[in-house]
Length: 169
Image (cartoon, rainbow, N blue to C red; front, side):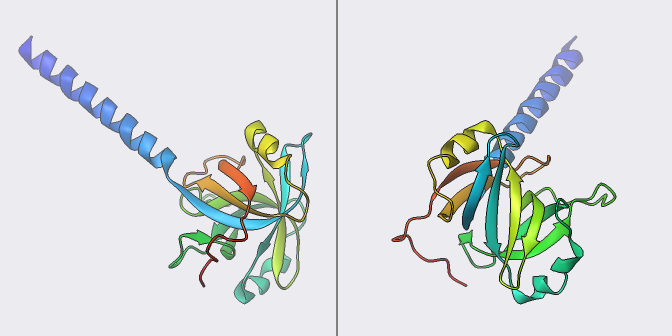
Protein backbone atom coordinates (compact mmCIF):
# COMPACT_ATOMS: atom_id res chain seq x y z
CA UNK A 1 0.00 0.00 0.00
CA UNK A 2 2.83 2.39 0.82
CA UNK A 3 4.46 1.93 -2.60
CA UNK A 4 1.17 2.75 -4.35
CA UNK A 5 0.85 6.01 -2.38
CA UNK A 6 4.38 7.03 -3.42
CA UNK A 7 3.59 6.46 -7.09
CA UNK A 8 0.31 8.35 -6.84
CA UNK A 9 2.10 11.23 -5.09
CA UNK A 10 4.83 11.31 -7.77
CA UNK A 11 2.24 11.25 -10.54
CA UNK A 12 0.33 14.10 -8.90
CA UNK A 13 3.50 16.21 -8.51
CA UNK A 14 4.42 15.55 -12.16
CA UNK A 15 0.95 16.50 -13.36
CA UNK A 16 1.05 19.73 -11.33
CA UNK A 17 4.52 20.59 -12.69
CA UNK A 18 3.31 20.11 -16.26
CA UNK A 19 0.41 22.44 -15.56
CA UNK A 20 2.71 25.12 -14.16
CA UNK A 21 5.14 24.82 -17.09
CA UNK A 22 2.28 25.04 -19.60
CA UNK A 23 0.85 28.09 -17.81
CA UNK A 24 4.26 29.79 -17.84
CA UNK A 25 4.74 29.04 -21.55
CA UNK A 26 1.32 30.40 -22.49
CA UNK A 27 1.99 33.54 -20.42
CA UNK A 28 5.12 34.44 -22.40
CA UNK A 29 4.49 37.29 -24.82
CA UNK A 30 6.41 39.66 -27.07
CA UNK A 31 5.54 43.07 -28.54
CA UNK A 32 5.39 44.09 -32.18
CA UNK A 33 4.25 47.09 -34.25
CA UNK A 34 2.55 47.58 -37.58
CA UNK A 35 0.03 49.80 -39.36
CA UNK A 36 -3.63 48.88 -39.02
CA UNK A 37 -5.25 49.16 -42.46
CA UNK A 38 -8.68 47.81 -41.56
CA UNK A 39 -10.76 45.18 -39.86
CA UNK A 40 -13.57 42.85 -40.86
CA UNK A 41 -15.85 41.66 -38.07
CA UNK A 42 -17.51 39.07 -40.34
CA UNK A 43 -14.27 37.21 -41.06
CA UNK A 44 -12.71 38.22 -37.71
CA UNK A 45 -9.62 39.63 -39.41
CA UNK A 46 -7.36 42.63 -39.04
CA UNK A 47 -5.46 43.86 -42.10
CA UNK A 48 -1.97 45.10 -41.28
CA UNK A 49 1.06 46.48 -43.06
CA UNK A 50 4.40 45.39 -41.60
CA UNK A 51 7.92 46.50 -42.57
CA UNK A 52 10.19 43.95 -44.26
CA UNK A 53 13.96 44.03 -44.79
CA UNK A 54 15.59 43.74 -48.22
CA UNK A 55 16.33 40.01 -47.96
CA UNK A 56 12.60 39.19 -47.71
CA UNK A 57 11.90 41.08 -50.97
CA UNK A 58 13.97 38.41 -52.75
CA UNK A 59 11.34 35.72 -52.08
CA UNK A 60 8.13 37.60 -51.25
CA UNK A 61 6.82 37.24 -54.82
CA UNK A 62 6.51 33.49 -54.22
CA UNK A 63 3.40 34.10 -52.11
CA UNK A 64 -0.08 34.61 -53.53
CA UNK A 65 -3.08 36.38 -51.96
CA UNK A 66 -4.72 34.03 -49.47
CA UNK A 67 -1.56 31.98 -48.79
CA UNK A 68 -1.07 31.06 -45.16
CA UNK A 69 2.08 32.53 -43.63
CA UNK A 70 4.05 32.46 -40.45
CA UNK A 71 5.55 35.88 -39.71
CA UNK A 72 8.82 35.72 -37.77
CA UNK A 73 9.55 39.00 -35.98
CA UNK A 74 13.07 40.43 -35.81
CA UNK A 75 13.66 40.56 -32.05
CA UNK A 76 17.47 40.56 -32.19
CA UNK A 77 18.71 43.01 -29.54
CA UNK A 78 15.21 44.50 -29.15
CA UNK A 79 12.44 44.50 -26.60
CA UNK A 80 9.83 44.87 -29.36
CA UNK A 81 9.89 44.78 -33.15
CA UNK A 82 8.56 46.84 -36.01
CA UNK A 83 9.91 44.60 -38.80
CA UNK A 84 10.10 40.96 -39.78
CA UNK A 85 13.13 38.69 -39.81
CA UNK A 86 11.57 36.18 -42.21
CA UNK A 87 8.30 34.86 -43.60
CA UNK A 88 7.61 31.14 -43.75
CA UNK A 89 4.85 29.24 -45.52
CA UNK A 90 2.07 27.82 -43.37
CA UNK A 91 0.94 25.48 -46.15
CA UNK A 92 -0.29 22.10 -44.84
CA UNK A 93 2.51 20.37 -46.76
CA UNK A 94 5.02 22.24 -44.59
CA UNK A 95 5.13 19.67 -41.80
CA UNK A 96 7.67 21.71 -39.83
CA UNK A 97 5.50 24.79 -39.41
CA UNK A 98 6.90 27.28 -36.95
CA UNK A 99 4.51 27.64 -34.02
CA UNK A 100 6.69 28.78 -31.13
CA UNK A 101 8.83 31.87 -30.68
CA UNK A 102 8.41 35.36 -32.11
CA UNK A 103 5.94 34.06 -34.68
CA UNK A 104 2.46 35.02 -35.81
CA UNK A 105 0.15 33.16 -38.22
CA UNK A 106 -1.17 35.38 -41.01
CA UNK A 107 -2.66 35.39 -44.49
CA UNK A 108 -0.80 37.03 -47.39
CA UNK A 109 -2.53 39.97 -49.09
CA UNK A 110 0.22 41.84 -50.98
CA UNK A 111 3.76 43.20 -50.73
CA UNK A 112 6.02 45.90 -52.05
CA UNK A 113 9.73 46.59 -51.54
CA UNK A 114 9.19 48.05 -48.05
CA UNK A 115 6.33 46.13 -46.44
CA UNK A 116 3.99 43.17 -46.52
CA UNK A 117 0.23 43.47 -46.11
CA UNK A 118 -1.34 40.58 -44.22
CA UNK A 119 -4.58 39.57 -42.56
CA UNK A 120 -4.57 38.25 -39.01
CA UNK A 121 -7.41 36.03 -37.84
CA UNK A 122 -8.11 37.18 -34.27
CA UNK A 123 -10.60 36.52 -31.50
CA UNK A 124 -13.61 38.71 -30.63
CA UNK A 125 -11.84 40.45 -27.74
CA UNK A 126 -9.09 41.79 -30.04
CA UNK A 127 -11.67 42.83 -32.66
CA UNK A 128 -13.46 44.86 -29.99
CA UNK A 129 -10.20 46.54 -28.96
CA UNK A 130 -9.32 47.30 -32.59
CA UNK A 131 -12.78 48.78 -33.29
CA UNK A 132 -11.75 52.02 -31.58
CA UNK A 133 -8.68 52.41 -33.83
CA UNK A 134 -8.76 54.21 -37.17
CA UNK A 135 -7.36 52.79 -40.38
CA UNK A 136 -3.81 54.00 -40.87
CA UNK A 137 -3.05 53.98 -37.15
CA UNK A 138 0.31 52.58 -36.06
CA UNK A 139 -0.45 49.89 -33.52
CA UNK A 140 1.50 48.15 -30.79
CA UNK A 141 0.38 44.62 -30.00
CA UNK A 142 1.49 41.75 -27.85
CA UNK A 143 1.24 38.14 -28.90
CA UNK A 144 1.80 34.78 -27.25
CA UNK A 145 5.05 32.95 -27.87
CA UNK A 146 3.01 29.82 -28.62
CA UNK A 147 0.89 29.92 -31.82
CA UNK A 148 -0.52 26.41 -32.36
CA UNK A 149 -3.49 27.45 -34.55
CA UNK A 150 -4.22 29.74 -37.49
CA UNK A 151 -5.92 32.25 -35.19
CA UNK A 152 -3.26 34.72 -34.06
CA UNK A 153 -2.86 34.63 -30.28
CA UNK A 154 -2.81 38.42 -30.01
CA UNK A 155 -3.17 39.36 -26.36
CA UNK A 156 -3.36 43.18 -26.58
CA UNK A 157 -3.67 45.80 -29.28
CA UNK A 158 -3.60 49.59 -28.99
CA UNK A 159 -2.46 52.69 -30.81
CA UNK A 160 1.31 53.03 -30.57
CA UNK A 161 2.23 56.05 -28.50
CA UNK A 162 4.39 58.65 -30.19
CA UNK A 163 6.29 59.33 -26.98
CA UNK A 164 7.26 55.68 -26.42
CA UNK A 165 10.91 54.81 -26.97
CA UNK A 166 11.62 54.07 -30.59
CA UNK A 167 12.49 50.54 -31.54
CA UNK A 168 16.23 50.24 -31.95
CA UNK A 169 17.70 48.56 -34.97
